[in-house]
Image (cartoon, rainbow, N blue to C red; front, side, top):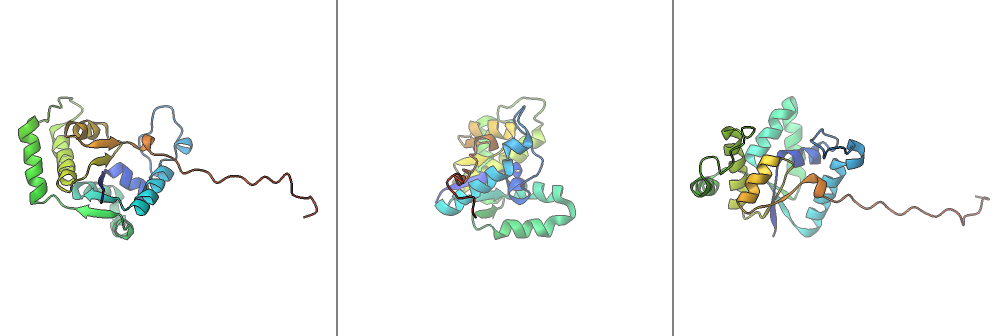
Length: 179
């Protein structure tokens, strides 16, 4: 069974398809259709048996942003048969420690826009995924993407997700006007 990691910006689009997320520059929200891309992704996951790992730090981020709607969001997540919520446990802690030993405290990332607290949080997300044998992370977060690539995890952004094909239009030219 293939396992992938979901970051908050992907998970929120599954729950709220018209949520505001960062879009590629110059692309209108309606044309980009991020929610439809994520919905189509989950249709594929359901067909091919891919398991989507939601690390508990990602879940926490989603629940904080949703305020009083926590129970509703938890129910929607738990209804998804392809989603599995995974904690930062002993396996993930060992993985996270190995990351820091290999790449240092800041994991080789020195940008001032990427504070150490975010690096620690992102490393936990990746450690949970790695400890569950995930080979890919779905995210729009540039810093998390850089970190994931450093640790050998493939990154897929929303802009790389295909849109579902539109059903063909029926040719009405041959139909009699007597209808």
